Length: 470
Image (cartoon, rainbow, N blue to C red; front, side, top):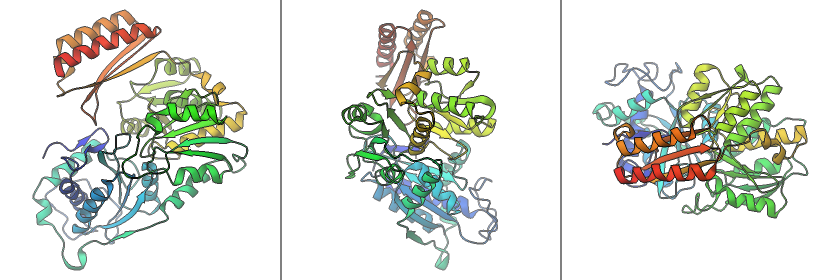
């Protein structure tokens, strides 16, 4: 079996390795066996696997795992395989159906489950699918825990530790998970505030938020114009949602709405549009939230965590206000890890993962939008004015399809083009080239003061990658 886990769980073409029913079942069994390792959960306390369990609950009850998913057709296949694998190892499973990734993390915590699983390929097309795993705390697993699951899934430990009789797990489905998450999200909005008189254009990308997201804004009083709320298993992220914010931006202008909100397929990302129909990306959302939190003395250590993809304009704007910006590795999981390790409470990515660690364990597109609406209501300022606090440098991003992922340092032509670009941009721009952790792509990002200049330089780097890896 090839390596399963990437930068955000397991992801790939559904029904092809690693996203097959067989592998999903093995992963479910591995998670189950890891949970059953704790001596108070099972008499055998020395199973032939690593030492760290997902759960340290210290009770005699059998482990429980929550499983949620987005709206992809292949979700049924992966869900069934995971349930089978978990039950075969003596774990009880709670299936909650379509719900955003942060909702699955929340339900895992609120139900005192020992782990949570989200079946989703996030922003990818419907052909792909993925598996994201949360611990009992609602946080995504660290690399070493994923490696342990992968090791167990390919070992003989599963065959040697299968329970029988009444020790086999049970599975049940609950229908009110979206209602529980809805109530929680509304509780995070100030009690003295509502959204009466606010017009919202909402694009749910035909994804996991299609049911809960409209209800949140409607029940707070907003007039909601909905888009992307009719999933059919095949249309998730298809010319809609956070990957295509120009759609919601145009509708925001057309309907003279106060804000446009575009979620991605699993609802953990959001891109906004202001009342003029101009796109507001993750960097600008992070910036305006950071300034408001700092003013209210809520920004811990006066620091924000981002990634190398975040715009230099955000870093400069934060610095001018006395706020430090720390860059973690690309991926919201690594942003969260840095926040937890260093004691910060605000972070995110340009792509729209915004993490408010005081309220959530992962990026939450719905809550981030609520937070911006709260700031708009509190300051009585439109989003077009609030976003001006973060003037962005021109930035281009080229996605180059590759046949393999060789170390960039080993590619002389690519290195030559990167150094040329860095020299031309000097201190007034940045060059960042990396491989995608979830797709066969090399990502080339440049930013600088002159758009035409960085467009030429990015094409030169992209061409060199095609020549060596295409």
